[in-house]
Length: 169
Image 1 (cartoon, rainbow, N blue to C red):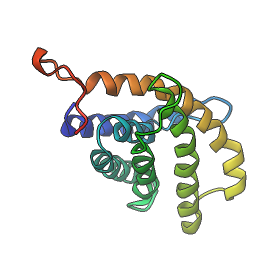
Image 2 (cartoon, rainbow, N blue to C red; image 1 turned 90 degrees about the vertical axis):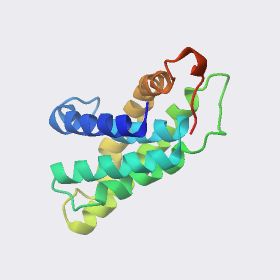
Image 3 (tube, rainbow, N blue to C red; image 1 turned 120 degrees about the vertical axis):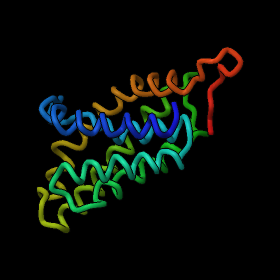
Image 4 (cartoon, helix red, strand yellow; image 1 turned 180 degrees about the vertical axis):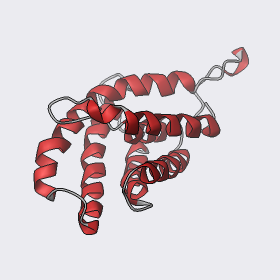
């Protein structure tokens, strides 16, 4: 999957997440699909490309919401950095590490987002929000990550027989 196709996919996911996903949730938490895509893309492909997706997706979220421009981008950038920890491999499977990284990345993402929104005066108290929704979202994201990992991993293969290895650049 090229970066252009990934950017198109990110815009589609942002529209889907903004329009319909906030309704669905588990114990007060919801899947942060955009953040997970940035994390998994950085883990499988390239942190530089993940930063580009974070900027495109973050500004799209900010345009569609009441956030100041750049707030979501700043919250997404650590996911690209955390996804770059490709050397971390737990057990013998490669999808466990991104799932664990997703839990930590969710906490960082929401913390930065809530701090920036509190500075603007448009968010609930930080501690209440962290305890009520962020921990539940971290669990949901940890469970959803293997599905996104599989999708990005499969989409990263070239369909030509001579190039059927995982591209990392």
